[in-house]
Amino acid sequence: MSIIETINTCRVLPVVVVNDVERSVTLAQTLVRAGMPAIEVTLRTDNALACISAVKEQVPEMLVAAGTVTNAAELAASVQAGADFVLSPGISDEIIRAASAREVLLIPGVASASEIMLGRSRQLNFFKVFPAEAIGGIPLLKSLAGPFPNVQFCPTGGLNADNFRDYLALDCVTCVGGSWMVKAEMIENDQWEEIENLARAAMSA
Image (cartoon, rainbow, N blue to C red):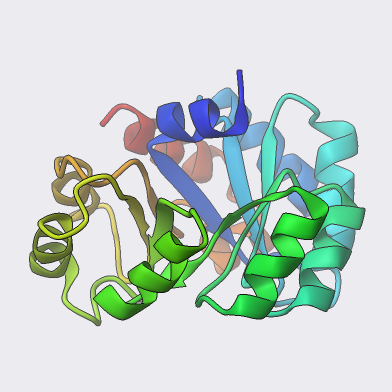
């Protein structure tokens, strides 16, 4: 199965902030048991790249994304660490060129029609919408779907157990990103059973 096909079946992409390598592996194993085929490890901690490498090595069945990738250097480091694809909170020519040069799937963040047009001019048709709730949420996505009927979105930012199903109901939404099932304090406190239950509930949607 290709990366895009896996993302299409993923539906909910857990967005993780983790600094402990051992816990990142346990977390990935927990999510796999819950039926989640992919994980986004954000570059927001000192050990994020090491966590990506460890998960790729010890949980090979899981698709691993690097998140919060903001420039070419971070993209290169993410690919070297073993990331299968990368997500960025924004979009720029620099990061598009870097992803193209390394032939890695990039899902850039957009918040406006102009940014989507930039991505489309570079043959991109799959975008992260961030921060989704803060910039208009579902009404914004419905508005963007009109002029961009061939574009798909992964809204992230402000989604939770109460509203993510409403996003998934939109035809233009391939998957959603969220951290409600992988909150940092839950990981730090080794609440693996609770994480598994929340992840399983999310996948059941």
